Image 1 (tube, rainbow, N blue to C red):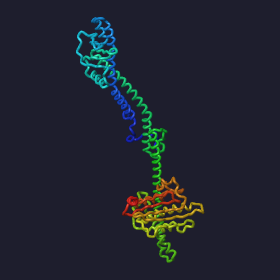
Image 2: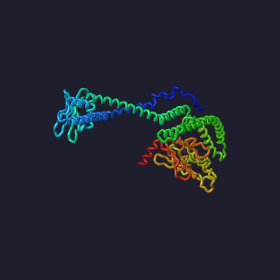
Image 3: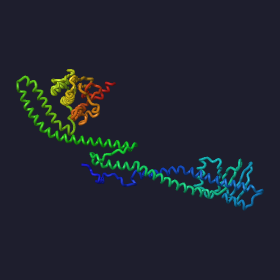
Image 4: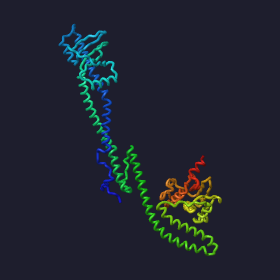
Amino acid sequence: MHQSDDLPLKEETAMPLGDPKRGLSFKLLLMTILFVMFADILIYFPLISNFQKDEIEKRLRTGVIAAHALTAYPEAPPRDIQADMLSQVDAYAIAVRTDGMKQMVAVADTPPTVDRSIDVRQTSFLDLLSEATNTLLLGDDRTIKATGAYGADGEIEIAFSERGLRRAMIEASGTIFLISLTISAITGMLVYYSIRFLFVQPMRKLGIQLERWSHDPEATAYHVIPSGRTDELGHAELAIASIQRRIGDMFKQQRRLADLGLAVSKINHDLRNLLASAQLVSDRLTSIPDPTVQRFAPKLVSTIDRAITYCQSVLAYGKAQEAPPNRRLVALVRLANDVADVTGISHHASIEWVNAVPDSLEVDADSDQLFRVLLNLTRNSVQALEQTADSAMVKRMTISGSREGSVVRIRVADTGPGLPEKTRETLFKPFQGSVRPGGTGLGLAIAAELIRAHGGTIVALENQPGATFEIEIPDRSASLADARSRKTG
């Protein structure tokens, strides 16, 4: 049953998307403002240092004009004229040096003692920073002597109070702060809405879809539909959509397996009873003295016994896993012949059967489980060869084996049409690895599980005529990885 879009999410599992103070965009806004303010602090001191230099140079330029006007007098200018010029420059004294001679062109009645000297012509960047910091933190009633250029080779000196300079620097600092705050707010808001539109809202929508999908993973209505974006969020949408499809397919397979398990449980109950009756009849056949009956009766009894054992283990496979292998030395050539007799391939009218297993080859394995593996592979080969309509085609099935140290290698090969390339990736997965129409793929899945229980591997070889499966089973005293490493070493 699909969850309706109108139904609210459970309170304990719903994501806290409504609190803007906890949202990514709000945090990004704060971080942007803080970073811009930090950048403004880094550029504040160079700005205020240049401002101080400009203020001093402006005083010096005004002082140069005043000095030219005062030196035009043939004698010392009147005191009222000097006072007016000093007021224009906001200074205590003005002096010029030309041709090595210093001349005081204007001076207050009681000039204060000079506390600091600044030569704007020879001040470095670090000196500017130091002078500006000194003025802001300590400047108030001190007197500064500033020196600058006067004409081509002269210089001018003015002495003035630091108080006015500091007041102007404080006012400039306030202006810089307001401008920085405005830039930070505008930049932050632009970044906030840009990130909100480009990332936060799509991520929030994606989060809501995932939250709803988590309550009903089989509902395709909650699957993420990729927006076609080419950035990281677009790649994430593609990946999530792919994961949702795979999980949905997995749930369908699990439901199918559950339904199959229920059906098999019901069939298994009645099938065991039927096989038990057949076993009673087959036991009576062993007492008939007819040679033909005596020849086939043991095989019939053995086959029915195996069928009963399989029925008893079906539920175990569906609930958990196969029983651990009961390993012992098995003559592989005899086991292969038993498989041929059960499948009827040894007397097949159109398929040649070849048992190429050496008579002396013994494998350390569970005979019943290995029989099931060979039986599944043989039946697949027989069905593939029987479906081939070409009468000129060679139809042959071969079981061969060899031992290399502590590892036995078994090959089951046929000359049929081979394995389609698209089925190789899912060859040993139930309901996915079937190589023929209508197949379930359970036979290969069971075979792979049984071989893994022996510590071995089963693979489908490539570049072979027809289909060739290779099985490797190590002895109990060795592992397959160790045996391979010793071989390559």
